[in-house]
Amino acid sequence: MAKVSKATVTIARARARGLTAHKRRPAASNDRALLIARAFKSAKPLLSSKSVLSLLRTELNRLGMVGDLSVPLVIYLAITTRLLNKPVSMVVKGPSGMGKSFAVDTVVRFFSSTAICRSSTLTPKALSYLGDLQHRTLVVEEEDGIDDPFLRSQLRTLLTEGELRHRTVSGGQAKERVVLGPTNLVTTTTKPQLHHETETRVLSLHVDDSPKVKRAIMKARSKAELGESLEIPQSWIDLQKYLALKRKEVVVPFEAALADLMPDGVMPRDFQRLTKLIAAHALLHVRHRETTTLGHVIAVPYDYDVVRQLILPHFEEAVEAAVPQRIKEVVAAVTELRKSHPTVTLTQLGAKMGLHRSNASRRLQDAFAEGYVLNVETNAAKPARLITGQPLPASGGGLPTVDALREKIAALKVARKAPKAKKKPALEKLTKAVHKAGRLPQKLRST
Image (cartoon, rainbow, N blue to C red):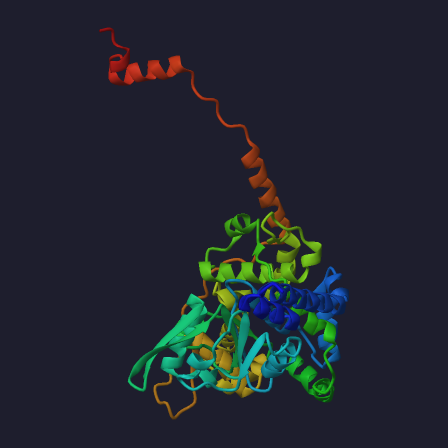
């Protein structure tokens, strides 16, 4: 009987248990393929839709959301950007009780726990212990929960650099904790402005605090409470699972054309956020978009058109391209009241604008910060006496229309196809050189 080596016996036993390398690899690959197939089957109705956000709008209404749904829809796009290499972070601003947290809480329900890392607060060193945040969104219920100088510094590094490396000492040994990104942040606040270093790293959206919206929220309160108990269809959660498993980058081929049309006040960071939201919308419609030879999804002008309509009401505040409309309304109200009053009180301003005193005060703080309204009362214990400050600047313009973008794209294509100027004949070049130098070039002179 032939001798069998020990190694052969070990391999045979391992194969019988399905533990050899060539058995493991296909198994892992098959598991992933199975997960993708299951997610695709569940999410197919959404992936087949040419307007996923329209379907989402219907779902949000079912869950009790009322009024302008641009804020929750942008939140959904922002969380979807977690799948890109440069995701968009955002903060929802507004007075208490105007639905900021409800909007975030509702949208987060459309994602699985693998896509979201949620917390009410974070201690200064907690961020270093979160581990892998790659392509996950960090959701903090209130910005006050991260209002610590050391934590803010760590968070800014993670959002900007895509990773965080924290060195510490334990048991006399140096250790390094690494938090992997890219990741993004979604939070809410009642503050008009965050810390200036944080403010520049997030997209700010303001909820509508008008009396009309306030009444609509009160009417829909019971519906909203019922919506919290309603289940989110599994197809929505599986849509994001499918996109994560089949993760692809997105190219925006009209980025240069769009940049040429941007208003002067738009900063590069704001433009990048806009293009990433466009990319997220294209990613949601991956089944209807072409891909490059590298497999990258190609965005189309329609993606820009949808994002533009969502973000346009918030554009001036989000990118600081001009004076926000709510500040213009404060200045207009103060100007009108001063026609019959030397100075204006906060109570008069609130009555004129149809706002509660606290909401009027919030808007007034923004106007104070920009110097468009001044308080001439020097005694802090007495009511404010308001007058208009520096004049409002001319509007910096809004986002270009999709028609203007298409015209710009067409113009750039024509410019690229224009025939190049013919090269000058050698004799003409020589003549020009002789006139310039006053003599023949050295290489053409007779010896």
